[in-house]
Length: 530
Image: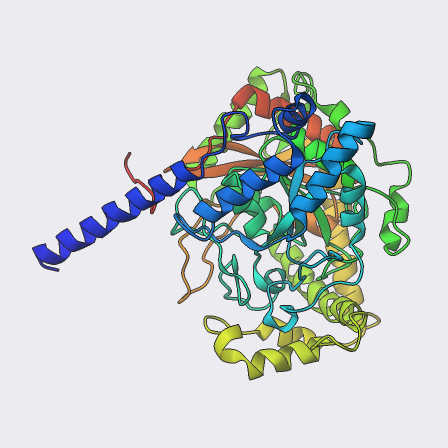
């Protein structure tokens, strides 16, 4: 490369940085809204300093400047054309009757696999469903609307929730394109709730809902410097959400603080006749804001899962500092926990997911009605094959094809995999570890640092602790722990079934003593050595 080319590239890089800085300045929220919380927005509406409508308008303006333009993080796949009208109606209701609760008038973004019965689409990122409108709200959406939330829009995701190819690029969908990490734009957000993670990190909204089968809330939350909470399977209804696995799927909060995650989770829970798994949550859901105790680590017994360390020494260092902070706050740390081999769990999990994906997706698609372009997994595969240029420009659909080859859930292979996974993750895994040392929670690095977006090779990240609680169906919360090379790293707390309140108490106390999160700068790339 000659000197002229070097100068040209340097000038282009400088121009990009200037463009992003100017766009961010243009999109700057007023001081009373920057990095806002649910509580601070509620206070602004209560005093009249802002209204639900003005808050929604300001977030839309910020999307204009930095989501599609400027840094172009590409987090929001679709905006709700009725959001302002809904917000204005909620403003009138506040004036006439008072607020419904802490989420009255508060905007929320939803992952684009969650049904909304409005003028928005629910596509799971696929062109096969890009024009499909749901006829009924997901139960979670019903709950959020009842709480007074303003549905601001839908967020991009890894297509079909990242269950399409073994070498996919997280954060890419044929409908939405590639979501970029606000901390370094050439880095991945992880998936599949990529848009929800990037949007809340970039302050395009205050709270978002993601979904997880294994790591799809917690991993993008870690990579985007957020709090992500995967609830116990069954605490939050899955009806009206494009499925992968009834054994592991759940929706959950993605926020900038533990307090906001607690408020959002409280609103999302409830028993739903359309999701039988929620019947087990009767009497277990609660107001999770009552668990927000800044002294919550004092006397808590924390087990460190060493099997989840060792992938990245920088991440390990950040998490070790977090463990030291917990000790200083009065936690009793039990080190070197022994857990079952991840390889055995992973093999069983993948078999389960392929069987359940075929069964559960077919059931979901059958209910879409005759006007939908696809009604089965076989239809989706055929659609992708016919539209390969737009649907499969970077990676294929081998997981869809493998899933289609599976038989019914009565197959012995499926039943054996399910029994193995549950035994290893529950009785011989999390439950055994908690009981052996009388632990309140297990702690580990959430996952790797954000990796480079790479269409040629797909995702190339490893490590983390999402698998064990995901396969068990148990709760898992990740909290910002610090940074390495300017990239965020998360620390995870996970425990037994329906231990959300305990985990929130521990995570909130950790957050308050470390205050590790800082907002992104929309850098073009990582500043190594700085």
